[in-house]
Length: 213
Picture (spheres, rainbow, N blue to C red):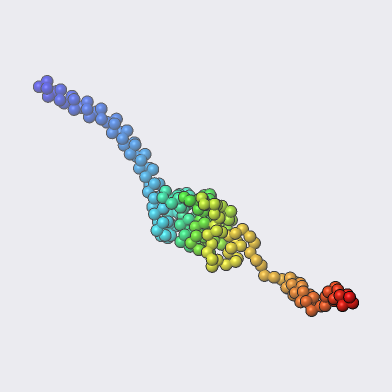
């Protein structure tokens, strides 16, 4: 009988001693559960960006604009880098404008591994529309250098237009000449041609002097 009582007493004590432990574990689990959704959301965001599933990317952005600053741990790419590579200027515009409305600061010159900015990536992949959008609409720096010391300009293809080279190279694009400028150039050219047909007096005098001898 005493052995039975001892067993019952041990069981009760053991059960009571475990209760605080269970309570503590439940609190830890609840804390972990609170952080998991954000991690899952960020992971989903990066996967969708890399896959170019922009409709789903935008839906996630509506839930949390801070995702726009998240970097892929493998490449260091942000959503802007992926959009630049994809040539999706519309998505880039949506990300930047929506984040601005929500008061979320997004670094337009954020560097991925290798020191590449979104403008570098756009230049490497020949995405003209994205390059123009980044520089002209959002003021992306054309002077940022990657880890090889190259600016976005150095990655432009041979087929890049003079205007694009000027913009990405940090120069003002060539403008059309005014009528006044054209008139001045025509007058200058006419005067130059006229001089070619005018006799060189100094040379003739020198020749005449030689004949006298």
